[in-house]
Length: 322
Image (tube, rainbow, N blue to C red; front, top):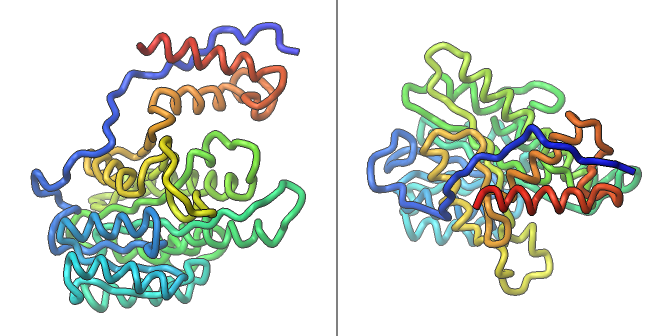
């Protein structure tokens, strides 16, 4: 039983967060008409919303997803914005390296560049730490191997997808961005779906490593960004359909926030929602990090002996931010 939480060395900073702001007030080297965006998981949710918003800015859009019929339907809306000549619809299983290589080849053959690579394909089947091995494999194949295969060229292990696009992007003259969709669950690791949490934690690590390597490469015009959505009403989060909960953001709100912060050059794009403001996310993340630093039990936020102390920490932290 803990006797005293003690003072935490982690003090969150104050930061103003807005849901969205327009990108078209000025020309941006990546987000402007004529550049090319490749989006995986583009048939619905965040991927579809990103395709629509980037099409509104005049980008050419390559839409990839495993759900062929749903992808074709989503593409109709994007085509209505930017025209059929500026949209590629490419059914793709991002867990298969041959599919990802074919996606890359189609895009470069058609348009010769990639300005925005949004690795957004994800699944979230149920899992347990000692059960449901098939669901673990499916989750890692799409969420981790999928993210890795859309970013360097035929490798092995976890990064085989990341090896497909980046070498070609490195040789481009113009600036480009790689945006990997992570999750707050990959940072705070809440109990309930350990396979999804582990896959998204690996995406975070992979993207951090990519960002460092790109930063250290001489004359590199490519940057990497970790997109961390908040509670977003999508097909993945709303399996039973229904109306959007009041606490959730729409996919459009989340995408506009992400684009704005990529435009500002930020790496960690931690999105709030209508239920969790940015300061609350900061406190949750810092409490989790302090589990390691202060030697607390794993996931102490949900531990019966520490839960009340976590709640006190959050109350005090939010009060100090006011």
